Length: 149
Image (tube, rainbow, N blue to C red):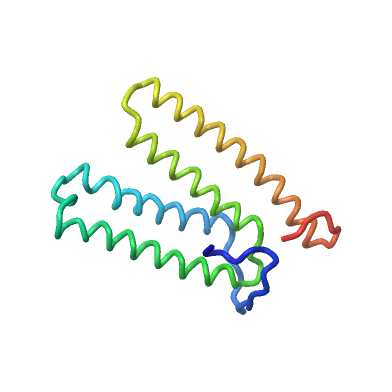
């Protein structure tokens, strides 16, 4: 929704797309702050669950979402935006959701170990998929035709 699909006609800007690691880092920080605003503020201070203070975390989370949408729109139109960048975004969603879910929603040691194990498995699978995507993008750049970026 926020990032144009691969085959959609889109205007490209003269700027170069950022490295996937920068995309991951920026989105990861924004995601953690968003989760903290939405979930942790009420747990730390129950007054944030009632009006008018409930507007503080809601508006903060909205500001983060709008800022990231604008940033992703800009990055998505830059030359060089490819599957590696998209994978970085997908990875953020999986990793940050797992971290925050594990930190907030687990109650027992068994739950924490299970969530940590699933998180480790997800990270390993994301790394394997990233290697595959990287090879596909490099092949497309070289023109061997095995993949598309």
